[in-house]
Image (cartoon, rainbow, N blue to C red; front, side, top):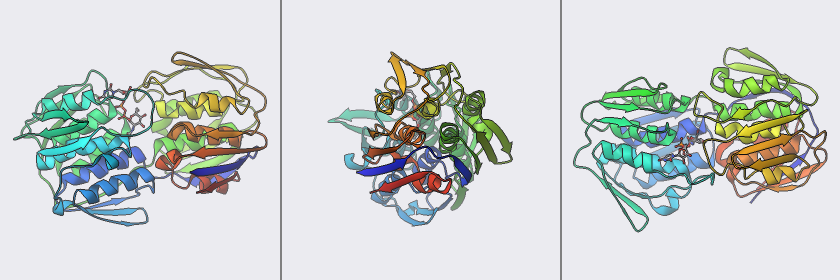
Length: 417
Ligand code: UD1
């Protein structure tokens, strides 16, 4: 159990470097299976989800070495195409090994993935996309048994731009003969990052980052080097922390363009935002102003991952903010915990109404999921008095040294393992 101790009410000041992106690193680690040689990844964040992906690679027979933020993977020794349930259950992204293994070995055996409980989170679109490429998939005793004599390029139409399904289709398409076109693809920056890695590894891909992606071929290279881009949700987290607590903070390694939907609302809440070539300065003072309405949507819309974070920033806002969650059915589980601090949030169906209060007070909270847990930390930092956030490891799945980053900015926060 992680125990976060927070004494709230301090302004944040200084600068902070944004970690490598979790949601870019995880699909790229799965993609390493496709490169039967040496793969060097830089700026890999130190996260328990990344550790889980590295454990899967080891289990598959790959050689893995990690030194600080540099990871070396040699997949030439890959000897296994089954991932046991215990490893699959650690995170959602384990499902991406399905597309990668099919492309490399034409066979994969794994079970349903784990990850944050945000709603139903089916994998039907992943399986549909892989079947379109010729994969035969049977579900037996909770296991997915997948094989194919040969993957064949095809046209895949996604009825919803699922990030994971787009990534699985992209990975599998690299092992297919002929051209694949993914229509209705997700446009998140992490898709472009995965495509960037695959191109460095020898794939010909056009249109990643748009809703139509073409994969024309893949001639694996012996050596690949790739730097993981900055984490836009970690950047959004720090930006929301500044608005929650007040302060003057510069984030380096952040791409403001990737979080413009979040910055738009932070600016409307009264925060000055000064972008500066891969860095971002945020200045906020006093109580924020209510904004809205905020509606989550696929990229480039307002990210569902930032919904709990912006909510935490607006708990002391002057006025009323409405937030509608359209991506996941059950993504307000942090709300009752935030209300324990004196916040006034009412949820009706998929909409939350935040009635700003003048002051929050400390209490003991239970982290419900990764971003919900981070939102609780931000709310506790902006509350008067002491709070404790009890967490079964959700927050460390996605944030590297979050306690140290916030402490460097002047927050009073300690993490007890
Ligand atoms: C990824 C991100 C997660 C983010 C989410 C939406 C990673 C590791 N995780 O998750 O942080 O919150 O994108 O931006 O990158 N769906 C289906 N069938 C499917 C797949 C998805 O119905 O086969 C639904 C989901 O239940 C959900 C919606 O589509 O309601 C979005 O899911 P998706 O875009 O796939 O999210 P993830 O890839 O799981």
